[in-house]
Every structure is written in structure tokens, then in C-alpha cells.
Length: 270
Ligand code: NAD
Image (cartoon, rainbow, N blue to C red; front, side, top):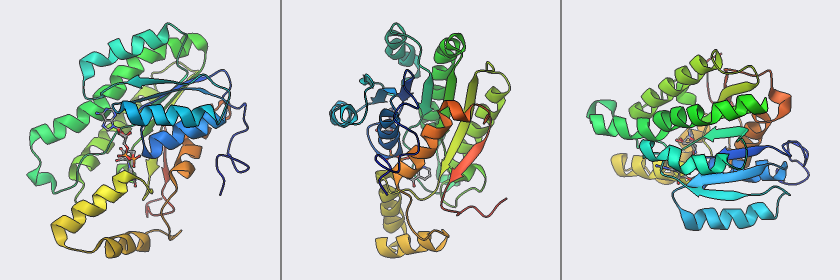
């Protein structure tokens, strides 16, 4: 599939004139989202902590579309410094699209997690997303266009064994965004994308941690995962990114307050 070419979900002007801030963009689903949105003509601001990876991504984005792309070095765990990072961006005009995304919490039994191990991911995801929405929503309302998308997890619907901190966080994120969907300006949508087993570093490190904890081979861990997924393969991050870009487009203006799985059919709930 050439999701950045002939099979791109959006035409090359679908997001023209729109500026997107994509968090956790240095790799994985965030980087793929930056690529798909650049291809659809958006001006993309890629944010993360890793300057080298962001620079390399910017070079790629330049080859994909006609938008003006920039990078922002921002640690989402530093809640108090987020405003100072983002406010200079707003001097150039509103951010129309916000993708709230960051690395997931480590695995392990919830009973073993310390309060600090809960606080850190809550800061990185929920507190950061809340801070960003408060900063960006007024500009979205003035522009009469806003799209806010969280990258969460299927654990919103079905908690995943041994990912208790993540399960707790994802439920909170989903409730937070559903609550906001009733409060935000009519021109702003807010939705969640729930990735299933997606071929990124996050999945690789989860496999490693299961291997270290149980001794199970990486191959059999993958096989166990694939047995749960009707499409019998990992999801390409560009597939997830294509759904995120669609939700960010004008065509998705009536979709508000949903949690949309992109999981190859793994969820069993209706
Ligand atoms: P990833 O770990 O590959 O990428 C995470 C990104 O967030 C990276 O760019 C990283 O640099 C950035 N990041 C991490 N901490 C940060 C911080 N403090 N400040 C700023 N940026 C930070 O993850 P991914 O696989 O692309 O997944 C994206 C999200 O989806 C994660 O929350 C993940 O847990 C969730 N998810 C992924 C899968 C999967 O199979 N890959 C499945 C379900 C849910």
C-alpha cells in the first residue's frame, strides 16, 4: 500500500491552509501522522524532545507537500513550560489541528506501580493535553475550525492485562475528551483514536519487557498477539495516521466525542 502516494486517504489539498501541531512526532504513529498531514497540504509543526529525529523528519516532510513545516522541542512532562513553548507559535496564526500523543507507560502489574509511576504518564498525556487544549481552543474558535485528536489505546474499551497504569490513564483521557466534546466551540471536534498492535518502537519495547518478565520468545509473543487480530498482521502506522488525518479534515466535522479503534478487529466488544 502506498499511503503517501496513490492510496493517500486525502487529496493533496485537503488540509491546505490548516496548521497542525503533532505531539510525540519524532517516531511511530506521531511521525506517520506528520507525513500523512504534510501530504494532504497542511503546515505541520512536529513536537517532541529529540531534536535530531525531528530535523530528519522535517527534511522528509518538505518532500511530501507544499506546507510550511516547523519543529518544536517540548517535553510534555514539563507542564509548566508548555505555554512558553507554544505561545510563540500562535503569533504566526492559529493552530487548527492538535494531535495529543506521547509515549505509553511501561507494562507491569498495577498493584506494583508507585504513585510516581502513575503521576508521570498522567502529566505526559492528560495534563499536557489539557494545557494544550486550553491554549489552542480560543484560536481554533476564532478561526472557526478546530480538530483535536488523542492517540490513546483500545484499553479504553477493554483493559489489557499487565498494562494497568496505561489502562487507568487511557480511561481518564477518554472521559476527559468526551467531557470536552460537550463544552468546546461548535466548530471544534475532539475525538480519540485507539490503536491496536501497530508496528512501532513502542510495540517492540512491550515485546522486550514481556520477554524479560516471562522468558517467552519474541516470536511467540508476536504470534500470540496476531492470534487475537482478525487481519492477522501488525498495523502500519501510516494506516493509523490516515484515520487521524481524516478526523482532522473538514469532511469529519460531524464526528465529535468518539473513540475510534484502528485495531484490525481485535476488540471483541460492540
Ligand atoms: P512510540 O513510543 O513509538 O512514540 C511515542 C512518541 O512520543 C515519540 O516521538 C516520543 O519521543 C514521544 N514522547 C515520549 N515522551 C515524551 C515527552 N515526555 N515529551 C514529548 N514527547 C514524548 O509510540 P507509538 O507506538 O507511536 O504510540 C503512540 C501512542 O499510542 C502511545 O501512547 C502508545 O502507548 C499508544 N499505543 C500504541 C500501540 C502500538 O501498538 N504501537 C498500541 C496501543 C496504544
